[in-house]
Amino acid sequence: MRLSFLLILLFLGASFSEAATLKRINVLLFTADDLHAESLGVYGGKVPDLTPNLDRFAGQGMLFNRGHVNVAICAPCRAVIGTGLLSHNSGAMGFMKAKPGTPDVSSTFQKAGYLTGILGKVGHSTPTTTMRWDYSFDQKDLGNGRDPEAYYQRCVAFFKRCAEEEKPFYFMVNSHDPHRPYCNPEKLTRGAAMPSRVYRPDEVVVPGFLPDLPGVRAELAHYQNSTRRLDDTFGRVMRALEESGAAENTVVVFMSDNGIAVPFAKCNTWYHSARTPFLVRWPGHVKAGARDLTHFVSGVDLLPTFLEITGVAGPAQLDGRSILPLLRGGDQKGRDVMFTQIDSKAGDDGVPMRCVQDARYAYIYNPFSDGKHVYRNNNEGLTFAAMADAAKADADIAARIELFRYRVPEEFYDLRNDPDCLHNLIGHTDHQAAIGDYRGRLEDWMKRTGDPMLEALRNKQDRSRVDELLLKTYGPPKGKKERSAKPAAKKKRDKGGKA
Image 1 (cartoon, one colour):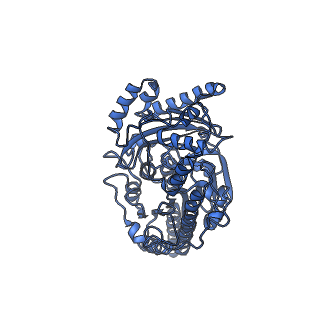
Image 2 (cartoon, rainbow, N blue to C red; image 1 turned 120 degrees about the vertical axis):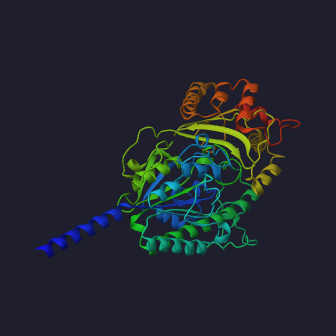
Image 3 (cartoon, helix red, strand yellow; image 1 turned 90 degrees about the vertical axis):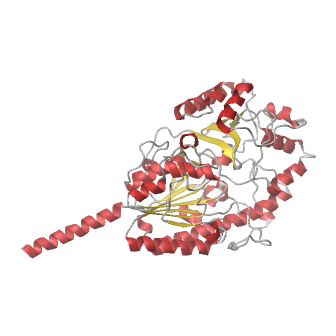
């Protein structure tokens, strides 16, 4: 009798132990660097066989069609992910750390007994000065962040350590592809591997927000090479996870930190700046092949989602919401709109932009746009050079360059008919009611979240007041302030023409 009782206790103990282990779900977040959402075949990409591993992965879980990042720049985007807070609430409004005392994802999971690891983009993905990773290898240890085999070997080692220590994991794997420098097979970046396939300029599909020029095609062919190598890396990481035996107990999320690094995408608030692939696989919980075509989800939602999935206790105040109800096939109110922002880009140059968008329209407010400040970023390369050359004889391309360099304070786009944001409707009489509505929605969000640019929006007609607020928030501008004259295309752009 006593033996039977002991056997029952042992059985129950094993069952409880197994149940406890099963509840400790692992998290693997894989990010691409500067990936255009529509490069993936499952997001409508037309380049043959560009992302086979990611397309296959998308069929194993849920694809969100309206995934966005909150900030379309690497470091502040990753700070949102790492803190669960919007930029102006964490203080990480550019290439700087969050305010002292800001909770972070790694420390939160470590307190719950998790091992935390990171591969690549370590500095940009570590939002606080106190945050530490248990396992960390950066760009130079990963073939310049562009070697699929190096990622595979580091993943194998991390999964082995987790198994040996009998701990669950939070693992952030960051590819440096397809970030510049793009993969030119004739001049391969030192340490980088060749992708499993390379592409010619005639195989390029030029995004609608760029002109189809030979120089643009040449650069985008190299971008597609980098995208294929990203896909190779993702495939190798997934292989390491499968071989570890932990795949069935791991929720995997794939996304990019912002759009492609060319003009009119990364470092802005246009539609293709912030849109990201957003794929989630969780075996036994998320239906394979599921598609969410209607709800807006974003990077700020990741931390609360991971906390709810794993049962880990986290910070009391987060700006995002768990998407677990959506992963289970349900509905969530309030996900019919998306807000995105830019504050400071590389060099800590304050160029604030705010955008509210839904499935139909996007309203953008650019407080920094005063007709003098010259906007520049590191996305210009061969594509911008080709555009600048063509602009000498093409007024439409000249207008695009003018808009890129100087902006206008307000923009309004019909995303249903113009997702490439080519026609600014801000001055169109027929859209004034809608513009007022979206401007009001943005103001409400800025008030609700404590955005320091709220008063700039409210005083947008008073340039001196706006300048005071910019100086107070971002300091003096570091870019060029003056120019000799504006191109004639400026008038066409201000009237809402093609720009």
